[in-house]
Length: 220
Image (cartoon, rainbow, N blue to C red; front, side):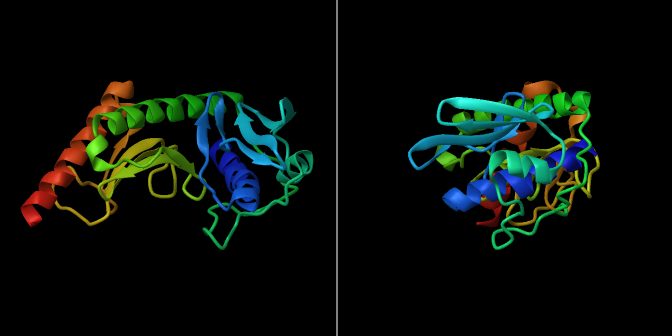
């Protein structure tokens, strides 16, 4: 329920506000949770972010916090018209402005630590492979995953979804590949519970990149 509530905030509040002002939807991993990249409105700094069980609003050089209660109350606090930008993506969660958000403090801390581990591993992968033109690491609200891509392969971490209902890492080639490593229809996935922190995550991502590139060389 915590994961669903936080994704509802990502889709219907943070990405809605970001898209209204910038035309973009990509969010960021931020200490304590996740949020928008900082941008400007009428020359003033602005950013919304989830910090554990609170929503933080930066306006200019001042930041204010409010508890995660309902989407409607958070939208009023932040001055946001709630609702995912459906011209860009189909939301995975329903907009229920008055539904109480169910956010467990321990679960939000676990999720923040998971995203921090995934980000560190993805940034290490990016820096080790500049020749593959890696994209920046972003949190995509419609999947609620932290991800990058390079050489037509996606790399990321999800806190769980309809396919795998627990945190996992994935490697997703844009073209399907065969072999024992590729254990999911979209590519390869590993339950995070079996991963040895940043080092283990980086090893998995690196192996996925190597196998995808090797398969491409064979194909050509």
